[in-house]
Length: 111
Image (cartoon, rainbow, N blue to C red; front, side, top):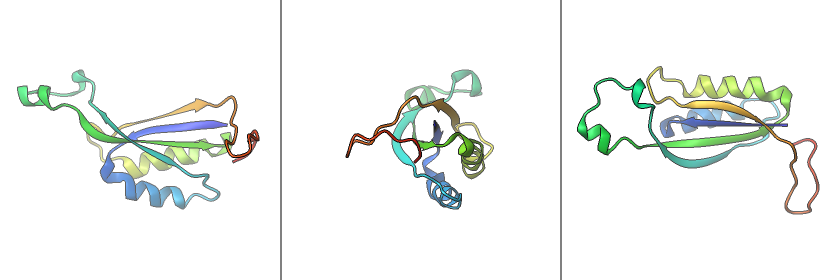
């Protein structure tokens, strides 16, 4: 099992949701609100205003999936969220050691 996490622009959420729903057997997604800023070295010509208001609203999306679905989901996130501008976000994959359903405490092998 893997967890795919991504930081994306809020304006891309509807497009991302539609793209993820189109993946066969897509397991579901959780979305969190987040604030962040780009690495200062990546931004040219910062102003005093930028230094005072550099946090921008973002979303973190999290997907738990089988290893076989990682590439498809990761690529879908990138395609749906890419604008080509600084601040498009990041996507990364984390190994999951265990998953247990809260309702009945059953370990999950498959989502």
